Length: 571
Ligand code: 7TS
Image (tube, rainbow, N blue to C red):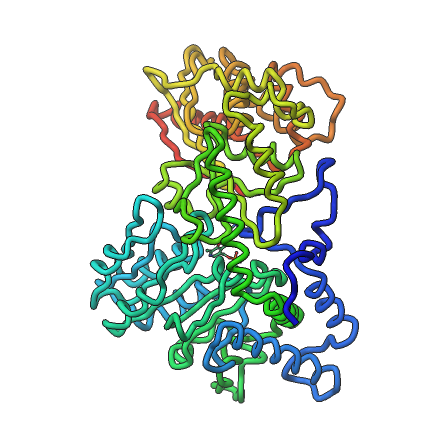
């Protein structure tokens, strides 16, 4: 029976809740989708009635579990129209699938001097594994250009695909620009030279019918959790003759035929590539997600999403100061819309939206080369696969005129985060810029959002005589840097270290009544504790100062300028 789209939202129990006093609007589906009751039930049912290990027991539960696990594989096969179920390998997700191809198939076909071709819009999962392969083999990693609106430049692809291009690996749909790439056309070009096309399907599979035979992809990777299934399960599809060349990543139980003392033989596909106990419940629940999607129909999902985007884009375009990245034509995109509003940092925008119950992602979306191509540090991103209460979101944006600063907005819930003194520091930062003479400098990045902070210090008579910062960041990170530079100017490195420790104690938050006066204006950042995702924004400048002072001790001996580019730990 085909499901009607009208009531679908109600089938996702998690969506029926209040977040920050507002009904939840979840627009972060490109990161992970929520799960319909049918998928949740499949997980519970499996553990309540059928749980057993697969492919090894003869008892009834083991047979039932095996049957369901293999039935899920067949559902995946039919869903993507693979020729046979042996071509469906269950993995942890897209990242693992792509890594397996790069590291266990790649070295067999790529040699020094060959080329691996990807594009500027790739997620890091479809970029870093190829970088590694290129480094290990001496091959060259080449990038296909994008057109000014973010679509793949097919002419450039044509020019770059040649006999030396051993592997082309492309995303089917971008997780930032929403563009859908012409996979069939690329497959034709690649196959002319007898080479291989790998497709990252993570952002396509939930949005459109996918037929791997029609696309003529050699490998196709995707994740269960982005298509209403659970986390920890994904798929690597490969043409059988090619999967046969993939060397097993893990040896052990499940994947062997016979084991002797000095040698072993291995099972056939797909089990040869699934060593150890697999994610049984994940595969079964992915099968349930596929059943659910099939009840709606992927063509209907695609049409519905295009209709939503066709309304959302022109409405969003009327908002002053809002930039939408990627093609402006709904037909050329999926339901992923990345945007920035005026010169507001996307982190601030996402926090403000969160206070209105709207969940969007802000950051570089694991696509740093694409951010560079777009010439931004980060964007906000709304991504939907359910019916969303669009008018609500658009009205909200419309209120959010760029002329309004946070202080003028009626966002009382954000008072703790955006107190006037914080806004003043971020809008008119103290000690912003560069020093004429620098004794020590450091660059520190916040890997979650791409914020970058450069800090320059000059010392005289054992004290911080001058200090300046620059870089890009949200309101909190800019204000914190401004407050930090005020607080430590004129202090000795030892006094500054004490302040850094105090700041860190304050942000840990287990001493709410303590007096943080020593930190001067920065004491007000105590309120950031209520927004755990933003604590790193506040601590970036202080961590930079700490690292600069440590390097200071070393360089004081040599008198050298220290120039560090470091990434903050992701603890
Ligand atoms: N490829 C693309 C195009 C993706 O969007 C993602 C995840 C992956 C690969 C990796 O998938 P995983 O399931 O192995 O993690 N993308 C995102 C995102 O856009 N926001 O959070 C995760």
